[in-house]
Image (cartoon, rainbow, N blue to C red):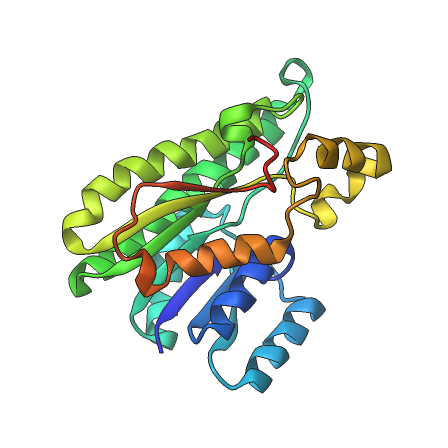
Length: 244
């Protein structure tokens, strides 16, 4: 059973991705600071399905210096690593002129430095086996922008540039690197939009609806499938046509 790490995999979008990959037959190691009841329920569903497995490993990815030891520990416990989904991140918003410097530094650290560092150490293990898949979770705001999300948008744009360049570095080793850019997905993170905000997004979307967690999970799952073996350096947009 091939092992895939999914960061931020204890709830929300990350958990949806992790459960879909596990259901497809992978052993998924979800990384987050703490385990949740919704994660436990998902792990039971995967176990009942009888195909893959959904495991948990606690870690604070903001602790960059601990990442090498984290990867070593996961390899020791679960074996060789086939895939990595860089999903964990902060969604801190606010006008740039009034944004707290410490909050801005934390956002940049967790959304850019952390996934790049984690990818560095995970890909070292992939390089020895000459094969693997990496998927970075970006966002439509990386290319379209959004009011009061300038710093967050910058971090998601950074992941796109990282994806495209790393795909060229690792291509000769049969390692694909792609990004998925969700739009406003119907999760607890968008619950603060309110009914008016929700309706505005729906009206702007070509399909007149909001994308769901399952849609993003399906896109990630495809990039891990045999059908995507010749897809690398791309950005797959999942937004119900919001940016069409």
